[in-house]
Amino acid sequence: MTTEFGHLFAASQSLAARSAQERIRRIRADRWISYPRAEQALAKLETLIAFPQRARMPNLLIAGESGMGKTMIVEKFARDHPVWFDEATGTTRMPVITVQMISGPHEARFYRRVLAAIGAPEPPRATLGVLESLVLRLLSRIRPGMLVIDEIHSLQVGSIREQARFLNMLRFLGNELRIPLVCVGTQKARNALRTDDQLVRRFEAFALPAWRNGMEFEGLIGSLQRSLPLRRESEIDPAMLKRIITATCGITAGIFSLMGQLAIDAIESGEERIVLTGATGTDALKSVLGETV
Image 1 (cartoon, rainbow, N blue to C red):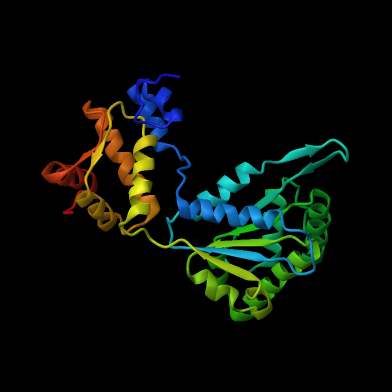
Image 2 (cartoon, helix red, strand yellow):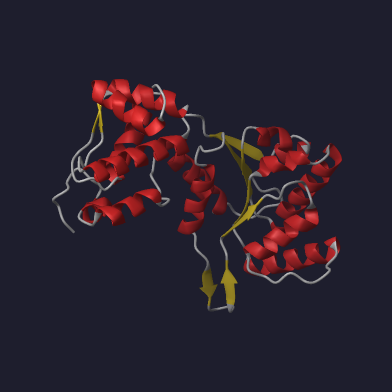
């Protein structure tokens, strides 16, 4: 590892010495950037997965607007708890099972999504009852510590009656398997869960609000700067931090995309740093956003 690029995180220092093409490819790839609110969410997930089994398990709702990093948080948590093989029982263990919510509250289609998530074949022409029994049997064998349902707000596509039936199914799964449920979605997800009073009372809501200018946002930008493999230290003044918030509406995905494009421009131009100060910074933002900032 080189110490030539001391302004970067250790993992990014060796990357900074590589070709422009390789660095740009890495910038465009998904990557985990830690920040306090995300770490708080991960801590809550850790508490849930370690929770002792009981008749009524606690659940969590992670809510935020599209692009706030909800899915990245649960994906990071799943990576931290990978699938492993239990040699004593000869069984594969999946601590975290993540299922993408279907477009509408259809129980049979949801059970098929669960089977796909655990890599189990779907029986041909299976009835709802057969699918339910199969999923329960396989999950009891795998013994997951948590079931994550992403995009739960899609539940609202169905009628109130269909929503109620679907939520009753989720409550049944949680009770039967004695595992916590984690639902992830937009702010509309809270309204979707309210269809089942018994279920919603078991959910703790954890919000991911849009970013505002302040110390936490400065910390996020600082972490991004240290993760981007640029060979020179970047400069962003406080006025430009406010403009980044305005330009991206404080949405995490927009902030990451903006900083990534600025880094790519810095590599392609040979500047090797992001400079967002004064008029120069305004021009740089305009060139990336294609609008007045």
